[in-house]
Image 1: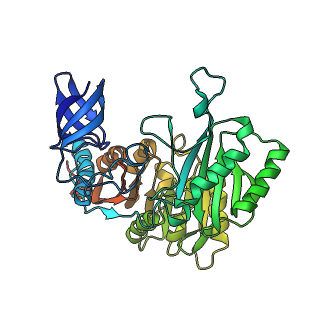
Image 2: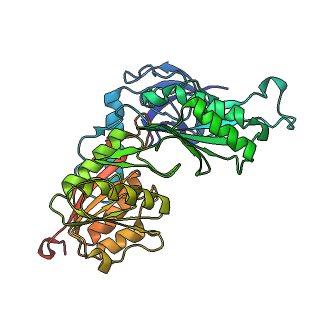
Image 3: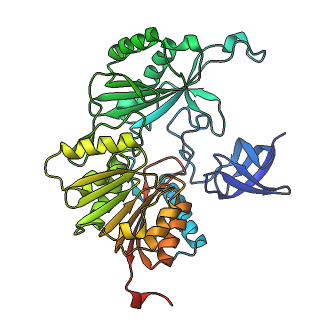
Length: 427
């Protein structure tokens, strides 16, 4: 039975929050001030109908919005969306007792997401729950908080090279591998040379299937096709520009979500490190910061993934005009660079995964490095690690939110921290 509620505020995941006799209820796609009819399921609810709409509501531009779990905020007017997202960061900093002005948010969506992961699922025909009309292959994105696949034929937030072609390519691969009926996750990346595709979930393929994939890659004009990171065929090196360097990342390796986002984040790092002779780039990936920093400074890049380190090293060696770049494959969670090692650098750039880098932050805090550029995709872990650095004598000079993951609750954060003179530190 539907229940009528008033939405009081937005949560950090973009859900509307309503107060009820049973406690707060989280309602996706509802906005503050709205009266809505909902169907409750514990502390969560499904939005049945908006009775009185907020003036901040607008019509989503994607026909799959509300079903596909990829976007959460297309129903918000842009100015409202920006203010909400920026306020989440400000609240997170306050909660960590960090006093720092948050600069205006930068829109870094650019042309759109340059990588998507589509899911291919085959219902289990042996299951009594499967009805004959629903035995077809499903290709698309996951529904929010679900493993159910929402079939799509285009994605309007992807770059033009992926918007319509990515679902078509995923479907063709699913058809080719359907005899195994295994759940497939197909990652497709737009590169300078065309599309780079990595298939996960299938496991080892028979020679016949691999040869068929080679033919399929040619028919689809793919630059590279890989299976669990193992290259099946590379018809053209799938290079991505990072500054003046052309990098061929390992299949399925980490990349910033948008080309514009990478350029904005790297721009802050390069500008902050101007004048630094030696820079450490920690959690460097395949070099989006290191290769740009090397146009002015010597760089030591550290990353767990050996394939990414090899790609960065190749790009640095084959690009003219760069300063010396050294690479080190090292697990910075288990073996962070120690304070004496860090003291050899004029600046540190750090861009860890969502979990942050608490152990590495403690070593930086104990070092004498004068400048830290902290980049994070999670406001909470950014605040935690920044607090560690500030306790160690750094001043948080700038905090810049960068909206690389537009239409989602996710936000990139750049922090510039400088070591304060001992005389200026709080007693």
